[in-house]
Length: 527
Ligand code: NAP
Image 1 (spheres, rainbow, N blue to C red):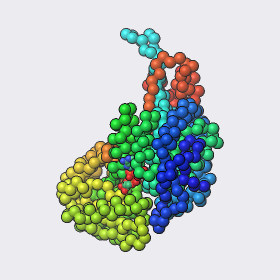
Image 2 (image 1 turned 90 degrees about the vertical axis):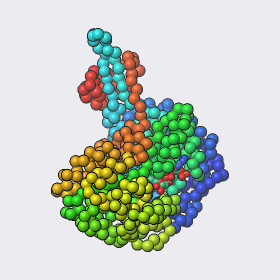
Image 3 (image 1 turned 120 degrees about the horizontal axis):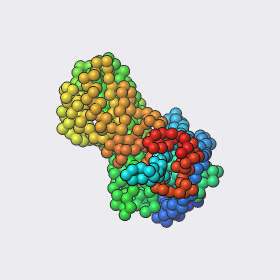
């Protein structure tokens, strides 16, 4: 049952009289439960508990952690329709999407359980001693990854489950051996509480220490800022706006002990539709892209916000087909009023820039929180002249840039800032374009795609969901897939450490049976 309390480890706490309420996204009606904002004392207690829990949790065996992660997945499933209904009410997302997102969330948890249980992710490297090496002997040095300490996770407005309380950030931080403190997003406070309770039930059942998980509510930025500034917080994960992510990143750098903030922020995910592709299948591409632009009412960080083509008669037909496909889509319910207002202001602003021409928009809005999917166009030269046109419009919007020629298209690619993705839609005879664009774009993005849409991010071992600034604050790391665990670990080298003190992953006998690099060669053999 939702009671609006903060979860400070195993303790429920509602010290503050300052409360906030969740909203029903489709009606804007306030939901009944009052959520208590965490006080400074509650913030400090959550971090203190996480610090103490870290001492125990980081020493849990891979099997214990895997068991904990699997139990979290089971407990989330056991919430059944209560969770689905609550997430739908708070987000306005349809049942199919929320159910799918729950599957993604539990799938992610189980994937990390498998990763931890298999064990080789710790990247164990052993250079055994060479006492007879000339001119100097080599000392025994072994190295592996260890957890960093308490991780603060800001849940994301646009994924109430998969990028939130038990989402990829939490799953990867817990898998690595770190306690997690959630800063709940006000867009889905009830959903957060249900999932937080499921995590705590799993923690209790698997004998995890008090403080391995906490969840805090807030009104405004104070709780989030206090968490980021707390001396004992070791790392931060964030998904949201550029403004929010950069503010938290800057805050963390002002600490006396600066820490990493892994912020995944805005991206316009350019799609280059090459001339032969337009000629061969322009109408089909327009429909495919319209589907991607309006998927989840465009509220995906991988939404294709920019489409670039060469200005040909076929490209004009492609624009017409895109406009037609957009015009026939339904109005969409946005996640919250802030996001809706932001979308409308940005579309209005972009449309008011002189060279931008409206191509089409979906049906009139009919409900609160709804918006019209919109597509507009601009010439390549005007795009290059107006820096505002590169800004993300979060929601169902895309700008088609029609370039005079290949050189202008390459200039647009060169001009782009860091992105999560870039896509090349190619035809049989587009080789003249592909080589240069491929080279330019791989320097700008975290994921490059051919002949597909950027929405829909596979959770797997090879996925990279990140990209150069301003897409993220650290292009070396992903927030999706098993490599996301690398954000919350650090390497330690163990030099001439006595055998009894070495972690299992580095012991001569290789008791965990993991892959290790010994003398530069991967092996599972004991030393
Ligand atoms: P947001 O405004 O960036 O907020 C995300 C979280 O960070 C919230 O919990 C927020 O607290 C907190 N926060 C933001 N700025 C802060 C600061 N200066 N100090 C401390 N905490 C701070 O994102 P949002 O609310 O999800 O949506 C707003 C806009 O973000 C959207 O319109 C869209 O442009 C963008 N967005 C982008 C993505 C993406 O994947 N790229 C995803 C979602 C949203 P409060 O809850 O108190 O506000």
